[in-house]
Length: 285
Image (cartoon, rainbow, N blue to C red; front, side):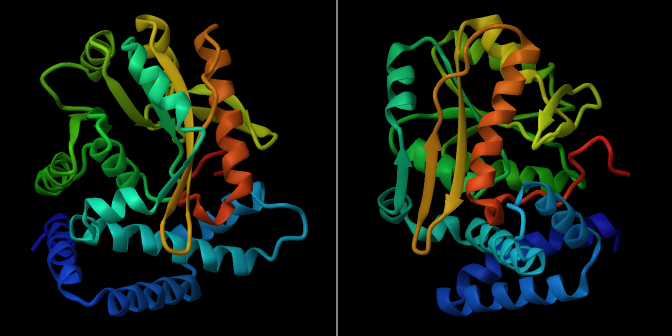
């Protein structure tokens, strides 16, 4: 069996098996798994610790923060596997959104809205909340390998009420399709703190050089849509989000920097819930 097939099988077992366990048992198992991964100190954990060292306040116990962050990341995956079992009442009822009026007012104007998010908290749950509260939306998914795994994630997100467009390999490039959705008054949700294209926009992020995707800003400029940064974090028994004020319309570089600044504010407030186990800054190997 190939490595890709094994990966797909692992996710399939996760979605089926974890849903059968009592929630406290599953939560305890994922915490133990996170602690074990932290102690092994593999490549992803080392990268996470290095990233957290950039965003945490001076004097932070990085070992403790990294362990807590791994538990947060494990909670994300636990909830992904169990999200369809949580039920709409819980997904909506335990979600606290600060400055939600920015989102609702923009959607009511019908001129298109882009929600740009970092990899924080549980963005899948946030999407389920958004759809369940009357706002269908479109998102873009990185094409995973094998194809069966990609299709599994597309089906999962579609069941939650999202329209999913592949980043690559679709019938047409995603930009045009996304622009069409915005011109029709639709909503987009785009993860925007990690550049996957090698053509990202240079930004200053926590005082150092990084790149972030320019797509959200470019779409806003091309369509007249409102661009709203959003940051997410976990609460003990639920989830929280902040809808930041709209990014002023100027140019792609300036607007992307404004997004980076909003993300930095949210990450600095809740560093343990930033699930970034990949390279971000340009001065790192």
